[in-house]
Image 1 (tube, rainbow, N blue to C red):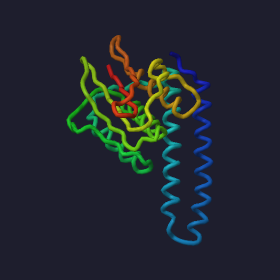
Image 2 (image 1 turned 180 degrees about the horizontal axis):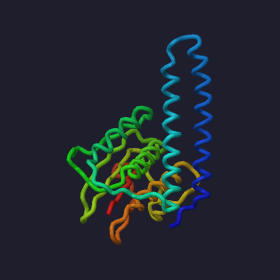
Image 3 (image 1 turned 90 degrees about the vertical axis):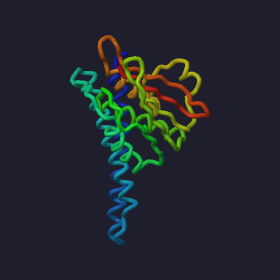
Image 4 (image 1 turned 45 degrees about the vertical axis):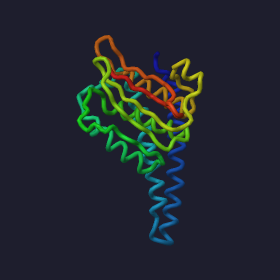
Length: 215
């Protein structure tokens, strides 16, 4: 499916505008706060959170536009998975109330584009938060000469229509756009006649399960 650039840009720019306004308000608040007392840590942390969110939006927007225009060269090098996931986990948990559990295998390595993988994971984690999840479990396994990354949370799970259709199209809302971004960056991974794939399920005991399949 071709990327709907108009929908993507409109939704992303709307989010960027909101994040920028929050950052400006926080900067004003921080300035006033520090003028009367030296401890502005809470305000500063909040400012940093929104700054990180804005930076992530820009990375996603630029990456998707480059993919659409054929300017993004998917770099499927071999990486140690823990080396990619650990810094991302630390950065995400610093500002968001979600506990991320990484795979136990420190020696797992695979071929993937690190930037695209982290875009997918960031959106998986944000969707988990929006579904009221407190924990996200990530595991990896080899699968039929390929590999997969499985992300499970304890949130509200997917509705039946989403599970039945398995279609991830941009809907304008953050959760809908997030799933669209996940599918696009995973499907950009190609090897021969095989292509990356995203499978949506519900986790036993409640919550969502998102499987990222890499060729």
